[in-house]
Length: 184
Image 1 (tube, helix red, strand yellow):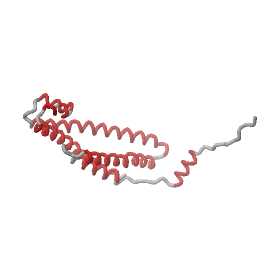
Image 2 (cartoon, helix red, strand yellow; image 1 turned 30 degrees about the vertical axis):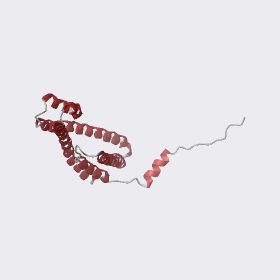
Image 3 (cartoon, rainbow, N blue to C red; image 1 turned 45 degrees about the vertical axis):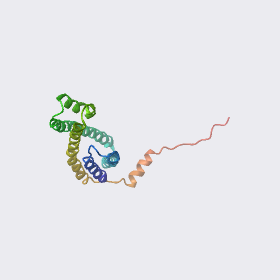
Image 4 (cartoon, rainbow, N blue to C red; image 1 turned 90 degrees about the vertical axis):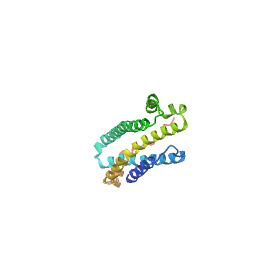
């Protein structure tokens, strides 16, 4: 679990380095790390929570964990949008060749909506404004990832004992009676 959060922090820091000319291979590699980090954290936290909870509360623990995970994603998305838009709007205001309508289009539809209508120098400035907004989002989430990593260092992991495993295996075993087919 700690490895997953450490890898998540690392990959978030590496995503901060994305630029307008970053190679596709680099982006794919970093996104692979993000997925691997998620895989190392999502299931292990659930198993850890279930192992430390009383048996009659495991369903509640699972539901609460999924609810809070979705709630956290919603809050993160709600926070990322205004941060990104604010930084991009400020950066676009410093580009004198853009009209107010073009600025609004970039914010609402993305830069591809107007790049075909711009000269190459202005296009690069618009892309840099977008990059600055996205990098600010990644930079703002880096401390949250660091706090998560520090917090998970204090989680006591408990392995299932052999008795727990054997007891659950006995409950799951259903005897099967084999009989010969009736004689005709």
